[in-house]
Length: 203
Image 1 (cartoon, helix red, strand yellow):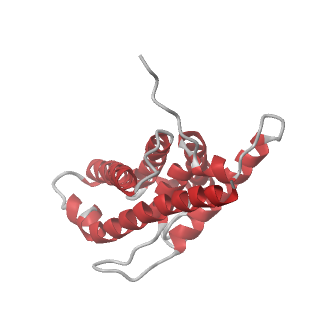
Image 2 (spheres, rainbow, N blue to C red):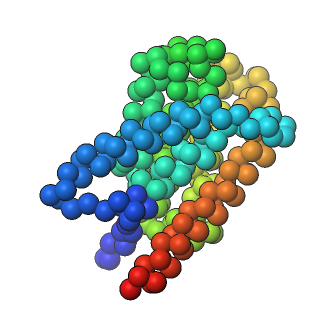
Image 3 (cartoon, rainbow, N blue to C red):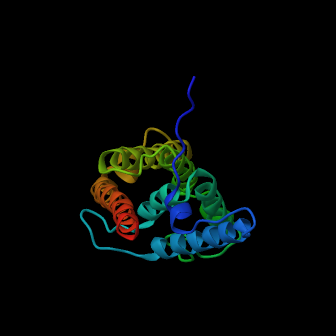
């Protein structure tokens, strides 16, 4: 039975390395840079209806697809580790708490969902899902659904299922999520299109 074709990730295409070129150092730099971008995106607060939005889920999913599941997962683990150690890298920190107390708070399920979503969309990217708009759109919907499902499950466990969990953790954020899904579905395939066209011009 034929094995599924593995596609090069965007990160490996833009920054290729060979075994003798210290790929571990490149990977370390990508993971660290990704964690910084995640922290910055968590602090960006954009006016939107019905609630303001950050660009964090957009960055989580784009890093997952651009880095692949291994580097994407490592980036999210570093980011969550930074937050667990008390660095103010999450949205609302340090005002709403820091460290493990914040991770165990109401957003904890979403933060864990970030890791699972990044790994999932990274795996899909390695199957070529980031090469055209429709498969990228599907991958982003899957990744966003994972974040919301895990976030809502944790809210239910934390506060009880008799509370308006959907009104707290889903419905107000759907318009912003849709905007970010559409943006990612445009950005990643367009980046690949540009790279292919540039390679054709140079050949």
